[in-house]
Picture (cartoon, rainbow, N blue to C red):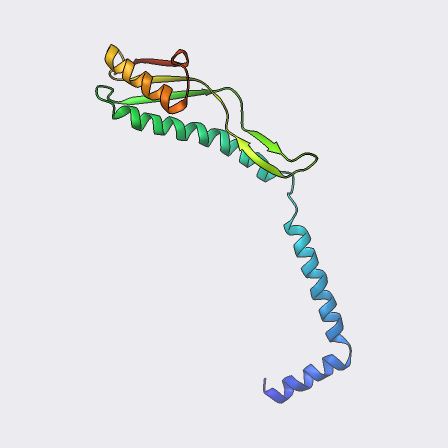
Length: 148
């Protein structure tokens, strides 16, 4: 399409009031897009955050502990199981939906299975490492031998 035909069509559209209609339509579409972008559609994101937070937190701690304990002299191959007291707790502003912070779940207990779990020196080292790392009492930590 050459330039003169384009200008003629543009002039014809503006003479018929199409420009105003086009701007109104574009404005309505823009407002609709802004409105739809703020919707939650059934709280899908909230459910994913809850499930992700607790499970990921637990798995990450277990993995980190396994790696650290495996490096303790005499511990050898290690498996760790954490039990949680509650799920993630959210703190909101008063009379608001604004989340101010997320409180991680409390650890109820730790079970550590390691190859050196039958040696008292290794049990003491692992217990001390776990209690210090997680700020738990020794009564909440169980160390036992990993079976072959």
